[in-house]
Amino acid sequence: MESKYRQRRSLVAQMLEEKPVCERCDAGRSTDIHEVVSRARGGSILDPANLVALCRQCHSFITQNPLVAEAEGWSKHSWERDDA
Image (cartoon, rainbow, N blue to C red; front, top):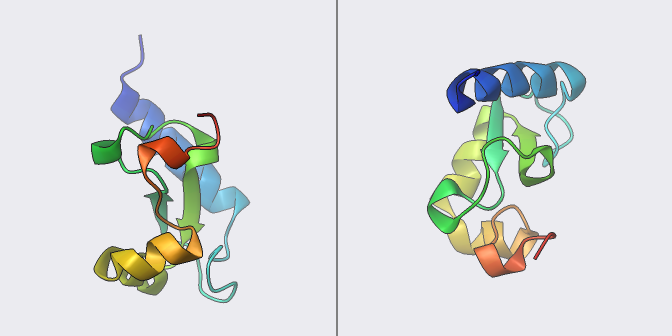
C-alpha cells in the first residue's frame, strides 16, 4: 500500500502541473499546495477539494495573516468544510 506521504507528493506534482498559476493572485507561478482546512483542523492532505495551488508570496501571506485568509476563504475551520 502506498503511503499517504507518497500519495501527497504525487498529488502535489499533479496539481502544480495542472494549475501553474496561483489561484489567489492569478499572476504568480504556483509553487506550493495549501490546505484550506489545515491538518490541525481536521483537513485532508489528499483531498483535492481541500487543496489550492499558490505562489510562495500568497502562501506566506495566508500563513502570516490568518484573519484575512479566513475572510478571503483561503483558510477554514473543520465545520466550514464543503463536505460537512
